[in-house]
Amino acid sequence: MKTKKKFILALSTVCTTLLLNAQQKKVTITVDTLSSQVYMLTGQGGNIGIYVGEDNVFMIDDQFDRLSDMIKTTIAQLTDKPIAFLFNTHMHGDHSGGNAKFNSEHTTLVAHDNVRKRIKSNQKMKLENNTIIKEYYEKMLPEVTFSDDITFHDGDETIMGFHVHNAHTDGDAMIYFMKNNVLHMGDTYFSGRYPFIDLNSGGSITGYIAAHKKALMLIDDETKIIPGHGKPSNKKELETYVGMLEEIKMKIDAEITKGASLNEVKTNSSLSKAYDESHGSGFINPEKLRETFYKSLKSVE
Image (cartoon, rainbow, N blue to C red; front, side):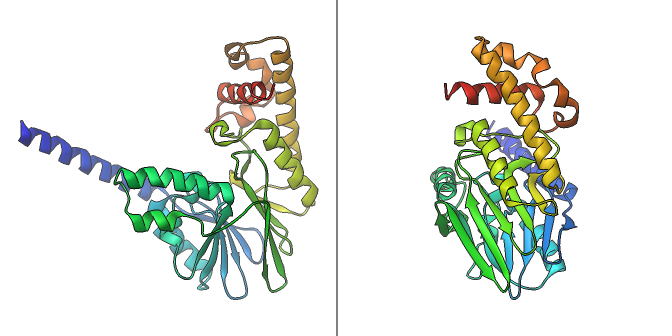
């Protein structure tokens, strides 16, 4: 019996290893050139922003740990300059999972205060369960944090990082490259698909829309937008996206006022029907979107 158990355990380990290897082989890192200095890297997880400065690289998000070597190779094809700063737009693992692999004596991790708190909490559980070691735990944590805004200067480029409250999570930040006119919005924007709003991590539909409106006040018609997921975007597309969210919010608000239950709103396809075909085939389907809107709006009644 013990031999059988060992065999099953060994087989399980092999299958897990094969699955991880297969997932890694399927992933390719593609590059979109947004300006003479700013690039968007797409792989598996959140979109990465790369700014190649005078002497160093400013990196935004890092996807998953297992993709780090592949991402480093792609960056090396763009420049041989070292990464001075790695900025996490928020705490989710598909945006911060590679922190430990990129954190070094040359690279400083930067994020909002709440991002460090949430990553610390998540990684501490792994440390206590012995799935990671202390060194890995410590290297996952942002080393510089801020509450509202932070500014970096590189030659004639000014890089503005600013917090948006209770949008996708409670620790979201956008990063704007003023001279290059590129804005990285993290998961406060899902280009071409319905958004994931993490209510359990402080997100809200009201804050999500407010984040978009803050971005629209900053950018112009020529701005290139890096969304958390999806293709590169622009001001016109973001304006249309905000209009969609506001329309769905208004309809669900009206249903709540009439006393509709969560199940009634979830199953009422007419509330989002106009946009389901164009935006509802991603990670968040129409029913899940309506459920999220309902729960978010009910929580502030």
